[in-house]
Amino acid sequence: MPYAHITGWGKCIPPASISNDEISEIVDTTDEWITTRTGIKARRVSHVSTAELASVAAKHAISCAGVDAKDIDLVILATCTPSTVVANTASLVQKNIGATGAAAMDTNAACSGFLYALQAATAQIQAGMIKKAVVIAAERMTWYVNWARRDSAVLFGDGAGAVVLEAAETPAGLLGTKTGCDSEDRDILHITNFGSNLNKYEPIGPSDLLFEGREIFKRAVKGMSEACDDVLEQANLKLDDIDVLVPHQANLRIIQAIQSRLKVNDEKVMVNIGEYGNTSAATIAIALCEAVEQGLIKPHANIMSAAFGAGLTWAASYIKWGERVTPIAVSDATLPPCDKTGLELVAPAVKACKDAEPS
Image (cartoon, rainbow, N blue to C red):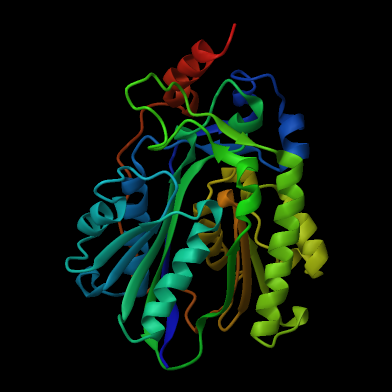
């Protein structure tokens, strides 16, 4: 059976950001309130589409792997903020990166999306259906944010990350995984005014992103921890065998609670939520890239990753890293210049959200 090695990795981080002090100009909050409850210090705001974020991240991953985009067999884009639904956004990414002939599909498992997509691409390689895939997670979460409400306004940011998978004979890549969905309680995290359930001929207004924070916290810690336990048993590993934990970056308290339950030392945990906020499916993809860049992931490292998202989807994965931790080549792909600050980018949305609030 072939294995799906991760041979390339790349990210795309929008240049504009909004600090906690700046966001306090939009909603009634403070840097201290946000930091102590979430660990977030700033979040990025994209001036381009989800497809553009995804394309830049994918180009970096492909160059890193040293492969020709034309040899890619599959493009999977994990996102809950697609640029377009019909046609799917992955098809535009496929076009942008020059992966002519590759299959292209979007997948939506919210914050668990990257691990779901990684599983799907790995399974196709293991089945011998394809040899090379690029798995991307890209989100423009600030598009959904209701800027009149503190609970959602402070949490989310934009960004993208990607990996290239290649078939190989030696054991590495995704070697153990557990995915699931607690759909009975899906309403504790959802967007109420979006989708074809609505009457498209009536005014809709700003997105209404609703969640029950305390309940999500409990379920996220329980769900991700138990999924990690299942994966460790599946892979016949002990906690001491894990070299790096790359959790979903939703809330620093959740990360610390999972770390405590799994008894993983601080130096083994990848945390970057402070800089980016919650970028949904993109958090693990971006964190994985930065863990390699920072030297946290070393050759042959045993990596555990876990996520929990709307649905309520959850996932945990054991990834065995390969030999290489440096890029074969570096892409010059970049986003177009942005001439606005983060606050300037969101100003029209802020006004629309506040105008729509009941007086």
